[in-house]
Each structure stands twice: as C-alpha cells, then as structure tokens.
Image (cartoon, rainbow, N blue to C red; front, side):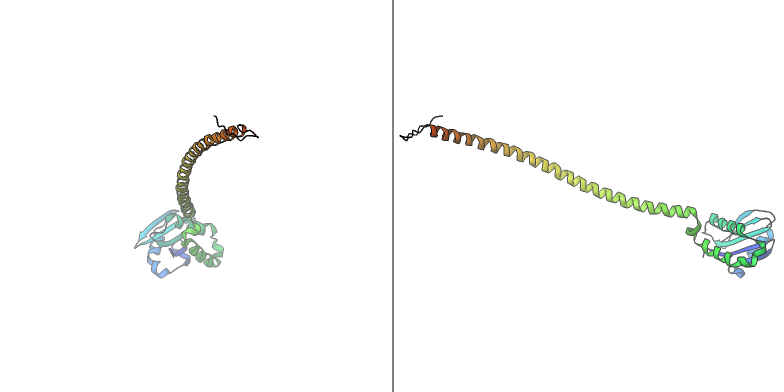
Length: 197
C-alpha cells in the first residue's frame, strides 16, 4: 500500500492516525514540532516521503513510498482537510482508513493517471486499426494488380476475338457467296453448276 501512515494533528498532539505509528513516530513527531504556520511540504527520509499540509492549526500528514506521486499525496491530504470535523474525530477513523486504501491505488483517484490509461487504450486501438489498414492496403494493392492483369488479358482476348471474328467472317462470306452463286447458277431442268465470283 503506497500510503503507509496518515494522521491528523493539532500542533504536536496527534488526534487521529492510521497505519503502523511506531515505525514513523519519531520522524512524524520531529516534523510536527517544526511546523509553525500554514504550509504544504514534502520531505524524503530513508526511502519514504513525508507529506503534510497545515490549515487553521490542524496538520494533515501522510507517509508514502518515495515513488508515490506527490500531487496524489496532496489530493489525499486535501480530501482529509475538507472532510475533517474536529467534533466528530472519533467517527472519522474508519473514513481515514478507507481514504488511505482508496488513494493507495493512484488509478482510482488520479485524473492524470486515468487520462494516461485512456490514452494508452486509444493508442492500442489506433495501432490495431493502422495494422488493419496496412493489411487492407496490401490486399487492395494485390487486387489492383490482379485487376490490371485481368484488364490486360481482356484486351488481348478482345483483340484475338476480333481477329478470329474477322477471319471467320471472311470465310463465312466467301461460303455464302459460293452457295449463292451455286444456287442461282443451277437450272431446274439442267443441273449446271457454274461458279463465278
């Protein structure tokens, strides 16, 4: 859990805390003893980050690992500050622990992380779309090559068909002329076959 410890204090007196207080007791006491005005600060000590904000004499402090984003720490502390009601401090313990759990996963609360995750998802989808378009482009290129080849073959076929048609047409017309001349060259009483062109 990135938020290891959290407390709310008035001066040096800790009113409410959550997490293993023995581990951080000396450092937290030293920090609380140095606070004299309303401020917001972070300290790094032995691989942990100590973040606090002070408002109207109340200090809201949390301890996280050093990699935990500072803006999320201060968002957590701001949440505590906004909800804090000194008259109901005993009822706030469970809420403090719940906030610690919630803010320990930055993806739950950090808008920048949410946006970054959305961007990553969109980027992944776009990469898949680009791959599909490139694949489709290759298929279209193949289709274009086949179409060009088919067009070329159809032109050749058409030329050959015309050539064959002309050749067959000349032979047919010669046969028709021959049959015509033969028919009209015959006499019904005499079978005379006179061929002329």
